[in-house]
Length: 269
Image 1 (cartoon, one colour):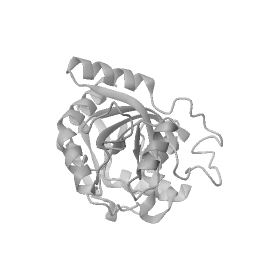
Image 2 (cartoon, one colour):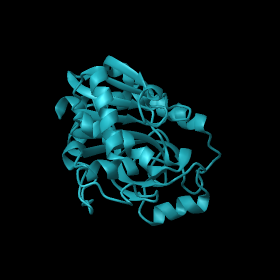
Image 3 (spheres, one colour):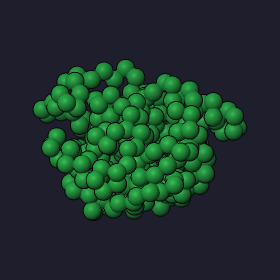
Image 4 (spheres, rainbow, N blue to C red):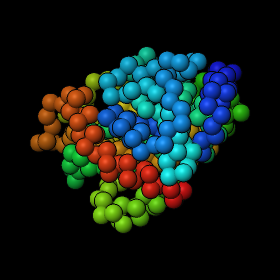
């Protein structure tokens, strides 16, 4: 695995001669953030050795190198999910490659279902903690070059970046929530009883991504920031039939605000 990570990173270095400082993963319906990027290179996942290819609508499948507010970034326009092939190592492979490309910080966005009764569709939530119900990517042999056998997870999401985002939101009159994201395997959307369970165990939102990537990132000592767009509700009395198209539509509406937040965050860090 380590050899594959290094080989892929070396391929991208030779292809782009680019040294990104920040990695960004764009979730369902949020791929249009690339409009904010001064793009220098755009490479299809299909053309990158050993890189997983997303099969989900709303995940374009391009690795983009460019500048946001004059900062070098590498952006995943679309991600790979555990439910696509049940291979957790493929899910976190891109994060590990980005580490070897030189990033120091990781910014992740996603679409999720709100289980906090104070949330509404279209809200955005800063992720300040998570609960992992997806297979842990660190199970199996540990590669000491990547990180320690037992990485600390007392601060999975960077408090400094959270504080900066709060300041940006206040300056721009943007209302943000904060809370805990529950990561599940999917691909089924949740039952009412499952929604209730996620709330009972301490969750505010639930989704099918993000947590494995953050675990792998923290294992490699990358600072992480996560933000979630609430695209549907798992609150009693507000649960209704939801399609993937519904999720994408809500996420697309949040794009201008999300773009403002992420762009300003990058400028300030």
